[in-house]
Length: 124
Image (cartoon, rainbow, N blue to C red; front, side, top):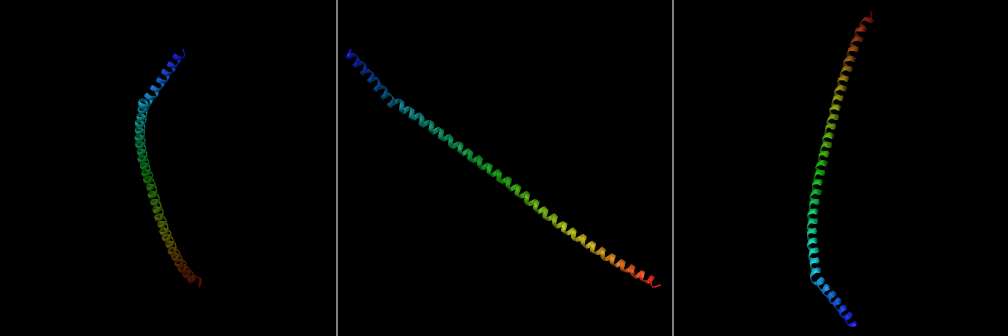
């Protein structure tokens, strides 16, 4: 009975040794190769995704820059229009002031003439 038990344990140990050998020689290398292949593929995909994201960021940056340039150009145009408008207003004001000065001068002359005319009649 002891001898049968020893043979059974020996067979179990032999099977374990074969399983370990099989695992080390065949299963482990296959797993390593599959892992390596998958990691390599995953790395390539990550690189491609990273390149796409980089291109998208560049496009977005260019679009924002273009938009900012348009806004800046509009602001500069508005400022130029405002400055032109203010110059026109100053010119019109100067014209109105000049017309007013001339009108006042004419009125002074007219009243002066009227005073002279009245002075003729007052001496009677």
